[in-house]
Image (tube, rainbow, N blue to C red; front, side, top):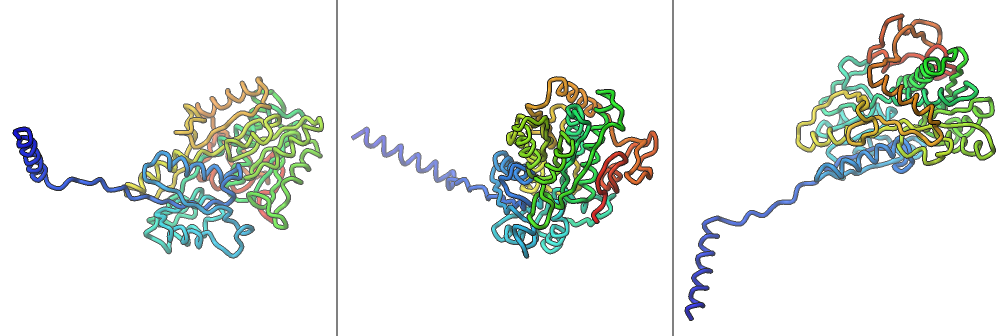
Length: 400
């Protein structure tokens, strides 16, 4: 009886303590922060769009409470009659609070959407609408730009090509023609020329560098030139290394076929860290985008309410360009890169990390006019808005 009384008294005391402390707090689930992404190509196409998609996955893994929703194949061929702005509206209807437009050719649609939806944060991967010194500054309070200085990756690719070619002929498989694609092709040429002359001691006049544009970021039958045919045209005319500036891997697949026939040819794809897997035996390496760190920083700020629109042009993390937690630009060597070429490429990367600037004069434009005088270094504006290809490069500088 005494034990029962003591137990009852204990229950009363516990109830009094709980009542004095007030109602028990119940943890509320964190609200999901949805962000939308518009991808110009397929999310799993092993190119530019997959690099963005995997950047979004990285954010989901690192930022608690975040969720990516996306639409891929956002281009006139796959979605005729539908604009990126319309697709962005659909993502907002599904809860997206921030939209990433991932391609330069979405610029007009991204601006249209941002102006019509001031409550939605917008990031354009590429573009210059938030660059106060830029030619197309808009200053929209809800729209910023993020891009990476792929110029460095292209210089590395050009260097690897020049260190490998046996014929002195390098082909560049180009997409459409605009400021971005001109400066990237020119960067590959500058890297090739530097390593051709400084490391191999060759005459710069003996290096041929030809750009052939297909008309878009990837093949659209009946609209663009066929990149498979362009790659084969290069190989058929003595070009033994093909660098890609497009989002797909035709250069690699065609080089692999030629190698299987006993031809000594190589390729360098673009955009995606895993691109060499299409043909390791002929792949010299790949310059790739790693969007995760930049997107994580931006979306962390957006989720906390501290995001501000800005124009961001990110260099590699020179301490380790292949650190996936810090470097937006990387270069993975391919199995076909020789040990000697690999060592020279390492030296070149170290030079770039130490401040080597290949956009330094004297440099002329393709038409012979002066781009940079002797001793002059290009500004960001001059590089970003490169008006022509450079002297020594073959190929169109403007669309016809």
